[in-house]
Length: 310
Ligand SMILES: NC(=O)c1ccc[n+]([C@@H]2O[C@H](COP(=O)([O-])OP(=O)(O)OC[C@H]3O[C@@H](n4cnc5c(N)ncnc54)[C@H](OP(=O)(O)O)[C@@H]3O)[C@@H](O)[C@H]2O)c1
Image (cartoon, rainbow, N blue to C red):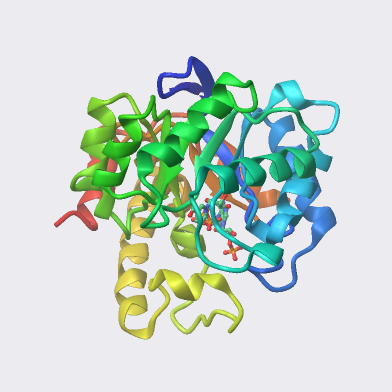
């Protein structure tokens, strides 16, 4: 598995990471199989994935507990990333970037993960009220104290990102980015490239759509968080399926698959450090690891790009 540098941290991360919002993510998906979740994390590590991404809010703590269980005895093999700042449980709902809250959230994450530090800690969302310099400054304190090795932000807009960077090095920005959702290309990616911030896309497979398995009459379960993405809304879905058909055609031409091309395209974009593909079963973990092998030609990547470039 190839690796890339994580921002200015000196840490190497695997190009394909594992996103774990399915692992114990009972608040996100229906029919979550916890044992399978633990197996997925172990399998990913066995296959050379070092970057494992979770968050305290996934499964309201359960994802971190299961990830902690999966990495027991092999902590050193993993670049462990988690996030805090979204409220749940006894803390209510909403977002809080207050330094004291973030410290408590990190301490609870470390406990659930059963580790003494994480390799990458993100502020999950901006709360719109705490001065960003104070919030990100708290992460710099955590770093000095050895609780985290690098610091990032997630879902921040450019002014928020710039303010965070004034408090210390932002090693990673994690935001939504895939062939169907390219808003970050306008400002955020160029800024990250100029400022040595690794970009970590979430939703790289457009939540399964770019895997090419969904039919035109596919419907999400009512409790599935992916309703929030807008990609499955009736108005957008047909258009998105047209893009998926285009991706399938290119994949057939070059002997690849839609998911591999979608991931290779992301890895070819400027400043992308690692793609944290989500998975619900073992075949998806191994398939996503395979996506990193070999090169797609510049012509095929350009054809993929042209499917949705405006
Ligand atoms: N920072 C944030 O705010 C934020 C938000 C969301 C997610 N995330 C992180 O980003 C990670 C990835 O996002 P995501 O899981 O929502 O979306 P994703 O990676 O775009 O899609 C994952 C889904 O695609 C399908 N899939 C996976 N591998 C496949 C393959 N090889 N072929 C075909 N289909 C495949 C599976 O769904 P089906 O089997 O149902 O098709 C899987 O659950 C999360 O796990 C989480 O760690 C962060």
